[in-house]
Amino acid sequence: MMPRVSDGSRTGNGDPETPGALAGIPQHPVETTDRDFVGLGLEPAVLEVVERIGFEHPTPIQAAVIPDAITGTDLIGLAETGSGKTAAFVLPIVQRLRRGTGVRALIVSPTREIALQTKAFLDLFRESRLRVNSACLIGGVKIGPQFDQLRTDPDVLVVTPGRLLDHVERGTASLAGVEELVLDEADHMLDLGFMPQIQRIVSQLPRQRHTMLFSATMPPPIERLANRYMKDPVRIDLSPKGAASGIEHRLYLVDERDKKRCAVALLDTVPGSTLVFTKRRSDAEWLCRVLERGEHSVARIHSDRSQSHRVAALESFRAGRHRILVATNIAARGIDVRGIEHILNYDLPDTPEDYIHRAGRTARGAAEGVVSSIGTWLDKSLIRQVETALGHPLPRCEVEGVAAYRELRSLKERRKRSPLRR
Image 1 (cartoon, rainbow, N blue to C red):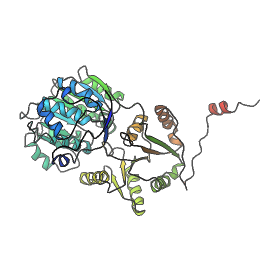
Image 2: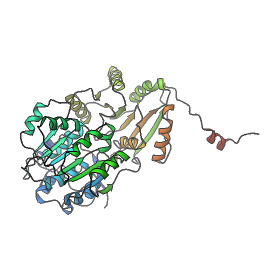
Image 3: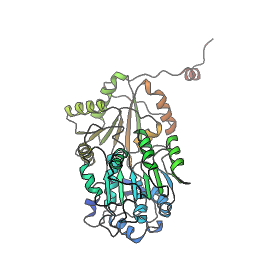
Image 4: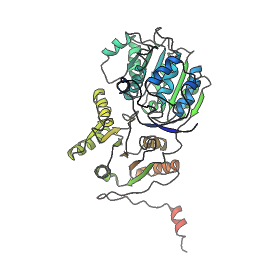
C-alpha cells in the first residue's frame, strides 16, 4: 500500500449538506492508502454514505481493520489519535447491525468529547438507507434529554462508562441485546480510573458478541482486559514507533519555581496555534488568567468546566478564534484539531508513549510542528526514557529571562569525558 496524504480523507466534492453533517468531526490531513473502500467488503448502502461524505481511500487502520471486523473477528487495533479509528469500527458495525431490534451495539469512550465525535459520525448514517439510530449517554450534561433519546429505540449507544451505569441502574438502558462492543481509547480509560466500571459493563453483556478494542498503547492492564473478554483477537499494531519526522523537539530545563515564568515566556515568543498540557486544573486556570491579562486569545478545557463550555472552547480553538487551548491531561483526551503548530508540555506526561501520543497532535501529514517541554530535575528519569523512545537527545533550549537548570553529568559520564587523575 502506497501512503498518501488526504485532507481528512475528505475531497470536498460531496453534496451541499456534507460540511454541516461533518461539523462535529475533526478534519485534518491524514495518511491514506491506495486502496478503495469497495475492496474492503463494504455493502452498497454503506458505500453510498462513504461516497457522499467524500471518503476516497481508507487510512491504514481502516484498511487493516474493516475486512476482519466485517466477518465478526474480535480485534485489537493500536493506532494514534487522528488515524481514522472511528470509521474503522463504525463502518463494519452499521453493516452488521440488525436494526430496529433494540440496542445491538455499544461504543464506550473515555471522554465526552470522543463520544460526541463518534455520535456525529454515526449521525451520517441516520438519514441514509441504513436508518441507523444512535443515542449518546455522557456525563456532565442533564440526564433528562438522554431519556428522550432512549425512548427513540436506538440501535447504537455511544457512552462514557459512569453515565451508562447510571442508566443501567435506573433501568432506562438495557445491555441484554448487545452484539457489537467497541472499547475506544482503552488506555485512556485506564488512565481515568474507569477500568472497574468497564469490567462491570462487560460482565453484563451477552457472552456471544463481537468485540473490538482500540488503544494508542497496550499497557499490561489493557492486555489482561483483552485476554479476559475477547476471543482469539487479531492484533493490528499501527501505533507510531517514534514521533513524526516533521516535529522539532525542544526541552527547557528550569528550576521548579521558574516553570510558570517559562511557560508564559514561551507562549509570548513561540507563534502559531498552541495546545498546552497541564496536570492540574489550578495550573490551567492560573495560566489562562495570566495569558488573558497579556491579551492572548486563550480557551480552557478541564473537568470543572461544563460540557457546553468544553465544547465551545474546543470549537473556538478549532475555528481559530482562540490561538491557545490550555487543557489538563484528562480533559485533553480525544482533542483532535487540524493545524496545531505548537505543543507545550507545561507538565511532562507520565510515560514516553504518552509523550509521543501528545506530539502526534502536531505535524500532521506533511506539516511541521514544534513540541516544547518544560522539565525540572524531578523529570530526569522520564526525559531519558523519552530520549530512548525518540532515538535521540531532546535539544536543551533556553528562553530569554528565565535561568536554565544546569544538569550535572553522572559519575560514569564524567569518567568517560575526563579520566580520573592519580
